Image 1 (cartoon, helix red, strand yellow):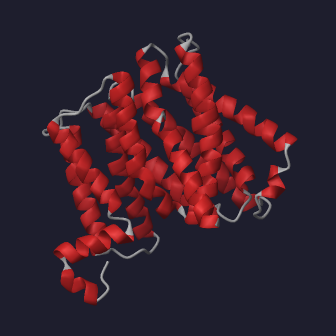
Image 2 (cartoon, helix red, strand yellow):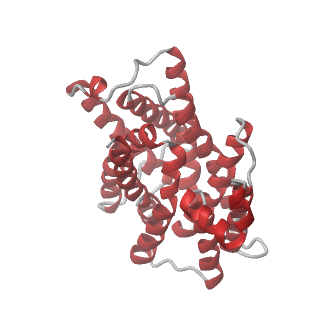
Length: 307
């Protein structure tokens, strides 16, 4: 039951996150600063978490041990990393379409996450090598042959992907034993501090295009931040970050769907092929998909348990 609930939480969170890039891209094109949008949505989320923690007995209802000094500082660091990651990714949306930014980020996050796992002692397997090669081939097709994509946007995507990978693995490695609501609130507050710092350093822009800007802040603050974050960390506690990442193809696919429907974005045939490659590289993380690949291309390895 716990794993089923974890998968349900992960599914809802995935749907919530799929709206991030399309909504942000829409209001950014309307003239709103990406950092202003982030500041508004995260300040709203902090307000909602504060009300929840002060008015409801959630700190004791979800279980987990009380927050100690180690957990506090890891949470602060991980949350601020996530905040800087969000500012980098949303800034990319000023020059890169939501669908391309999402696909590129997915491929890079997979690459850096596997690298972090390797540094922690996870062995290099044929499956991981194939996933990286297929994913990087897809990334090459998505961003354009010959480097036609915006160079500064790609640099920000690389930075945001590195930061997101560090954030996600740190949650699983170090913060899993603690109370979900406490950790989620700490992470969101820390991310908000990082975002507000960037907002102040970049001029503290306050323009919000009405009514779309306010609707975006409300929707992303409540659905994609407040609800999405609680469900994400609850899901990771039940099924692990590795399993949670298996839903990335769904999030990416939904992001592309929303971008095509509401923003009128489109992909070239080569970019669609690259999208397929990237999604397949993620699907191969599932044992069932990998066993099918083994039966098709590496039947001898089944007898020795490779992968």
